[in-house]
Image (tube, rainbow, N blue to C red; front, side, top):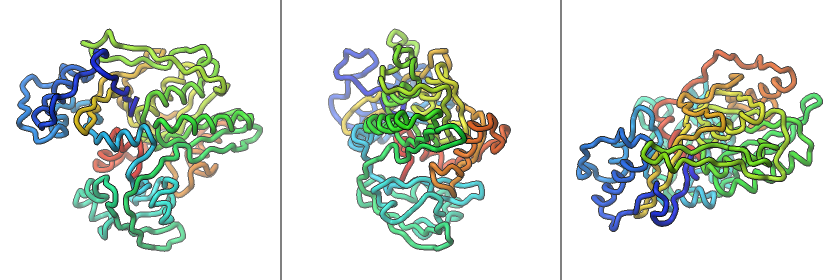
Length: 426
């Protein structure tokens, strides 16, 4: 399952699926997209009756017109080669960094992937991006140019950056897109907090290759005898639901061993007979915890939110940071020609019937995403708020009435894309 997606099954034995077109003419591809949307789309009754597929130059244009705009920000058509590489192999074509706008309006590097062009160039979290392709941030904002600044996701595409480092040094950097291998658990460590041992895990992407990394991190926590667990999902936009179920099972402890419900997948009314309950995985090395803490932002979406919602009925759950992005739905994947159609096809519902959190999951303690501190640093604002909550039972570092800054429209288009949000990097 991808980004809230269940992978497609072979043949038509699966009543949710639709046979691909017989040829790859644009008219046939458009007809296929329309058929899938009328059959499997969660809001299929909102698809217009009168659609002339000849009005659309390609399937992406048609899908954009068919989406239920009041809710759906995520249905999309993706390149099959790149999508399969990302979710099956944990590989992507990327510069290897993500960025965010801080409270002062500055664009800062928020994360750098290991063994990537950005890492090789010495970029670090907190570096300020002054220019992109010789345009200042104010010029990019004024011209609404964010969608074009980093170029297409193709090998060899380059970008010129001017970077100001933490010590004030300004330097020019040229990056070229390469295939990079994702490390999904780049930070995993034990923090001593009073008489408590706190396991901190920063998790980037719910891709197939994440499961052994999660298992290794949790095994390390068990060997260290942790009392508390912090799962940092602040930029994790989703991915395979099977990986989300595995992570939830590692956290849920005894509930996973007794195979309790993780979540329900619920389709549109025409496909209600296909609704399915998914149980927690039986994992011998699952943790036994009284509490779990999740660090979140508005870029925490989909499978990340599902983990939080799935474990809440079984473990006392605390959310620290910002309100999540609000994606309580998922997608089946429909392969056709050289593409994959990812329409929203189902709701995600936990064992207590809780779902439809389109406004996001609100934090118990609001805390800033401290871009000037490295992830896993006990002094970083969000993690410091968690540690204070563990030690004192309160979170005075955060204002419970505060509202973290929302991403700009251009930033939202990027970060809420179901594939790119999973990566969260350019």
